[in-house]
Length: 342
Ligand SMILES: [Zn+2]
Image (cartoon, rainbow, N blue to C red; front, side, top):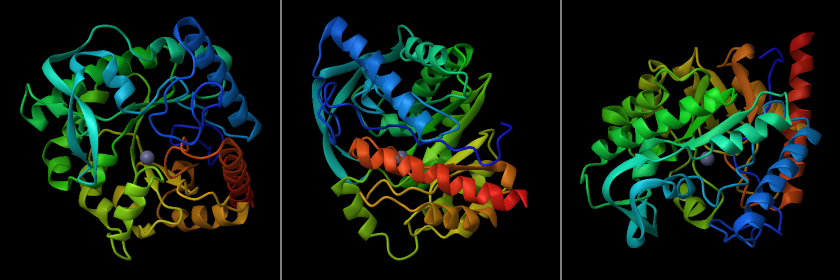
């Protein structure tokens, strides 16, 4: 990456209203069959264009082809029954009706590889592709087969590894694994979560990252955040082991969060995607606010390893707000880039 402080987003961006109900998670599609396939590709193009207009350096598909960052991937696997649903508590926080693992899980064919090839055809900019992490996948299912979170995570890691290798071959520059569950199950993260993540990135011929956040700006998450007290030290539990892992990039929530910035020191040496945009509010940050967050982070991350980013995905926001936030991110990064060049 030649540009200093290259900007990117954590992942999802709002979908157009003709494709899915706006500002809604798990929003049903408004098109069907071939029209849906074409609509998704068109939405991907619009999302890419929006990112480019906002000056984002590392672009993505905006997750326009998926209903949800975890379930859409799982839908493509065998061994999971979407009819047989159970209520589970996701991330120890909220109840959700989820599909069941009923047999050995396997990837019969590539999941996002055609979408990634399509994005690759649209731009010469570096592209980032998000996949769910093994632990977060396990946490979004009912397991009636393996009856072991660790065993199931290991099977998912093998599947993710196949997908990641294919995505890298399709020209993806950075593959990011979304692991919000890393912020909740510390013992499991250290016992097997990071090992499963390393299995998922084994032999992958591009850069790899892990995104660890406090979730979308939905009520269950904002209520949970209120219980975390004035200092959020969750990252402290897992950073030492993450620092020693093979993962290249760590994507974190920083803006408006109560995470003490000095915790980033614990992953010194890694590239850090610093969340400088709060996705849980409609208030658009000023470029100066973004710059202030980045300056704070620079005390703990070398400038050549700092990647300004959003705290999390922006799919629950309006397109107008999301676009404003992307522009603020670019403008804030430009301020600090100029300061560094002096
Ligand atoms: Zn997130």
